[in-house]
Image (tube, rainbow, N blue to C red; front, side, top):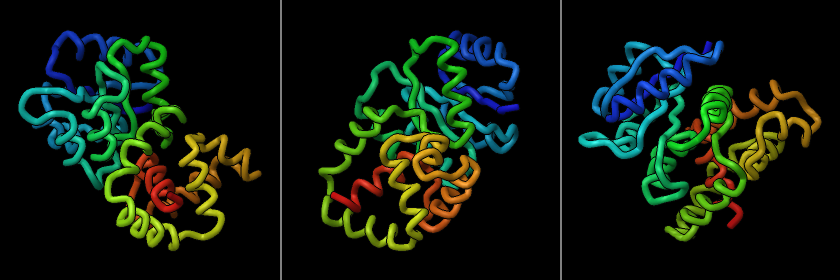
Length: 213
């Protein structure tokens, strides 16, 4: 079972999401919070695999709540009204694994949680490119030098896996391209994240882009 927690200041939205996620046999809604201030306690108490969180909330918003979870194994999907506004960029930079539009159909919401729980990012290649382009212009030289230093720690195969992530490929797609199993890709990714001190696919994609810019 995939343990899911919901954070949104709108009670109706929380109720709707709970109904949607509870309809899937492999998802279990383990808790809710009405703003970001309740996230640390919620995560500590219920140990969710995926946190579905509104990006704009009074008090502690989704961006700050995500930032406070750095180092936690929980994966964050942020909810937003617009596809790629500044709040989404900030949430991804803070460590979110992807984002969902609030009008996403129920079946796609469920599948998004499954994707993130499996360790993939809920971002299409086009969204990944947009994020990379957004961050690429800021501190280009410093970011390039730092990224290259981190990627130098990787083995040739680990670097190939990282490059696959940067292309927006899933673990299965990377495995097919490198003629290895999905489990092997996951093992390589675990080592990559340990070596670079980062456990987020989108941030890894940005790192690869910075290094090759």
